[in-house]
Image (cartoon, rainbow, N blue to C red; front, side, top):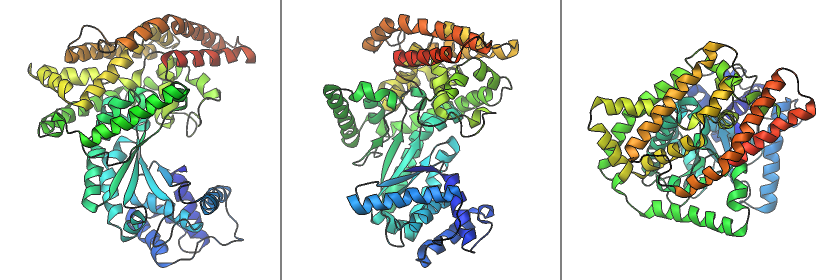
Length: 502
């Protein structure tokens, strides 16, 4: 199960108000929220909702979901529905609010939790504060009992998509890496076996990329004996569509996890302190460069919406969720999946590389020796190898000539000029990646993918030009409803050719 923290808060506020306990719960400070919720969870076994009391549609719906989960567990056993996830978890009160909801249906009491409460930390800020949040949670006597009832395991979900949209690829990767280090250490301190649930997407911009390298590049001790990750719909067919492929991919998952659990690498020693200090410096600049364009340039919003098929994507039944959490008036309101999907369709692949080139170039320019430090990191640090390899792959799948044709969809010249900012960074990123890797061309170490792309590209490149023409006609009002479905066909074709979407 999974629901946004804001929904839990609204439901708990309604329950507390209807029970006559507090009419202004949402206005309370974090400490007062926690004190109130803990009192209800620890001291009063009664539920808050009266059987015949009038409830809002939202509260009724949420409680019915948890009631169904309770029935399924009673009927089929405790291995059914073992976790419930809090999207956009930012605080301990977010976790306790979910506990209140679970208490209402008998899935949580003062001694045990039949369903584990799993926070999902998504944005850069939330990931940065995740150590503090979990330290406070692990310190609660009540939480200790719940965790003990789950054999001292605590699952924590990490959001790759929103952290990328929030701060760019480099910042997202590094923040996730450090969060795992810190959360693992906190777990060890409290005797809790932290299990990470990686919310990876199919694209590099959403945490995708080669699975084996992704797992083996995780921080030391971050994989105890369990690991969870998501597999997106668009890659399931390729990975598990037949018996041989399924065996191969499952074998790769298991072997990668075992490799990371038992193998100590050079980067796990004191050398890593120097590596990490370099990353801290580079990532800070990458974050600023990315946000200066995405959130600081007044024309960027218009550029994105005019130079991509985002409007067509939003109108089609693609994916499991709507394109935005609300009416789209800013980049922040757009979900990460259509954000990445749109950049893939326009062949910019922006979320998988923007900000990488300039930040590394600035570091290299500070001292000629710095390029050698980066090359040493590439040779000896699996995390850095995986990071650069993914950027290399994304750059190979991009096509800035086709991207320029999409940029021409922008009517305003100042808006269209954003393309040249992106192009300059693309070229700089390519040059820097090749300089660190020591190669003359992209995908030099992955001839299989290089040959595969060279074979596929002529076919789906054509689809981009067809899509462009259809979008132009649609904007002029020249397409019928049936003809608009052809845009959907090109979207599917391009996604299939790239072998990723959102």
